[in-house]
Image (tube, rainbow, N blue to C red; front, side, top):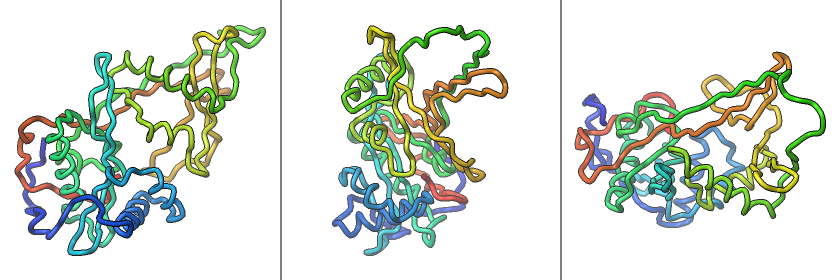
Length: 289
């Protein structure tokens, strides 16, 4: 779907905007600066951020010779009906502060989705920091989150079973296989590429998570889980990643959240979505992430 608001009759021609691959290392570095500033992350993370990216997945928006914004379109998939459906995963959308509210993020999205349609990719998904710009491009919320609560008094005593141990790099192939096995039976779970697994196994400094393997004495039925150290609460309006499980000892219950979350999904059809020829509506407020 596309918003019908025509108060912003902008196009790439009217903006004098060019969207394409970075032409050199300088443009890639400028995109990294814009993206991390938009995401509220320190400039010290730019080398790590760019070092994990395949430059062919980056699209930058230029006005003249100046890079004013960009995004990353990751080749990935989502599991539906036991098979992984190809998807363009949108991340790290950023526009320089002095160029926002001019339709640049909308033009970046339109360019990438047109590329995906030409390549026969049926889906695109992302985690939105703001909804108007993405809804105008055809995205909508989707997903589920299930919360389990168990009274601690119902958990038997005695020897701890199953075995719990900290995971090592030797466990990574098993963890990937367990994840894929479970994901095949879910709707919307991410078909993780090497990029995603690197983020899981090598989190940025200051965002440490600790992986554990939970399994029986025989080693059968193992499953991975992650915990994270307690941190101060996030600022209003921000998102935080939660540990896989967190005991609530004050209430006498243990809580585990199981999430299959695809916050925004669009189906890219052979012909443009309804209203796609209309001028894109820029984001209002904070930049897209």
